[in-house]
Length: 250
Image (tube, rainbow, N blue to C red; front, side, top):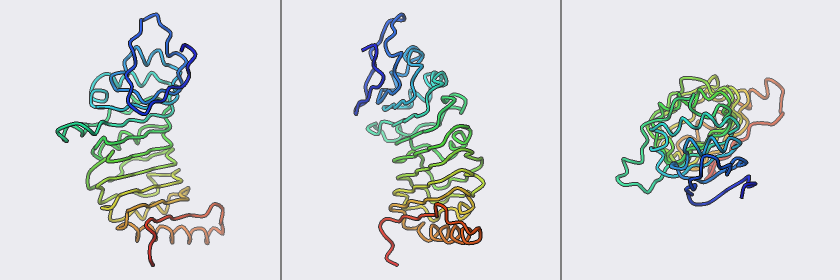
């Protein structure tokens, strides 16, 4: 299958070892889902045309060691999906110690998805430094902890999804998300409020909430602030949209 461009599997696949002179995988553009053990220097150097990569398994062996160094060589990669193995005992082994430095990530990465990594929110300071990041999906306990205080700026981020987390307090403003267009909060049932300062994010046009009842009041305040801005600027282009599920009875 020397001409194969795309490989997609539901389960985590382990790539077969090939000889140094082999050209197998050189034309791959989409590869997923593969095991962390398959992210070897030889495999990723050969698959230099990759644009999309999904990895699933015990990510500690990928993120904590030198294996992740190979990612920075994927100059064409724009989409990376990292799913940690949740069937690990004891549960403490599921939590990763941290993320690699930002310079080890693919240099042109635009879309990043993390799942079940149970990272501390302090690691978001690393993702802030990914200069081309436009889409960030934090799914199923990707980050855990009561407080996230945003320190830097997500300069190009347009879409942010936070799902199934125990986040209680979130401190941020429009300054931190200058290009954010859409925010999704799913199963954030402990989050007290969405930062009101996000109303100042000039490009924010959509807020989607699902099972985040405590934060509904703050979402409505953001909606009201956006409506006032539209009236003052006499602009109805796009229009801010707020979606709440379950629907508010009021």
